[in-house]
Image (cartoon, rainbow, N blue to C red; front, side):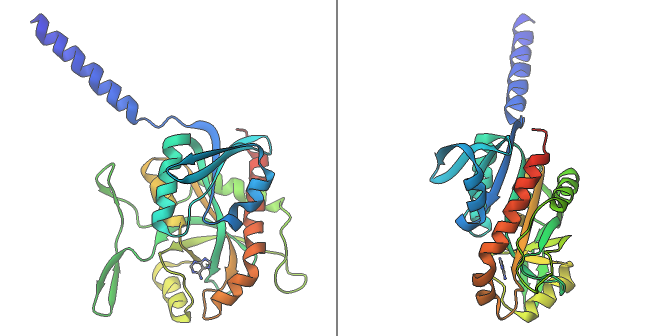
Length: 274
Ligand code: ADE
């Protein structure tokens, strides 16, 4: 009888301990990700008391911006790199929230280089089944809960509202027509392992998924955060129109678009409590 209750007790302790180990206990630190150096350049310049952490070859930089604890990293381009860096980030730094900053191809006709799209949701436009002349989009699967994920990962609503407010108080650099200030909007951001420079694909992404902008990392970062229940927001500034001129347009506008998106994050941090 005694042995039985001891075994039972030990079992309970073991189950509780392993459940505890699974718990994500966020720390008062905000993670700021971009895909490549240009996208995180301004953030690194603003970082006070920077400390470098090399984790599995990825460089993370911790310190303070606007008096708030942050950790910054460049994920590398594409969904796999973005997911890898996000996983290492959550495991090592346990951030309270994850914000992604960078450039994107604008799909909606009114979007011009330098404009900002705050992703109200993201989806992975290239995840699915290919048949003869037919692509069927699939929901990703959550290996933690063994369930289907939603097709669209919604942004954390508080982060979205805070970013909209911060945008009102941010000085953006102008890119196109004289006198036209960069416009801020919310929208659907489509992510895929493809650089889009095709008018046909632009129309398809808008018609099939209601997408406003296209890029190569946001949906992957959002999926990792969703699966670990960490609040996340993807912020993008338009560098091109994803059309046949996308490559040249992007080369001309990347610096300013990346600056605009990162500068919005700095205003955002100024509004945070911790
Ligand atoms: N990032 C910036 N422009 C892009 C485009 N046209 N396609 C995919 N990712 C992008």
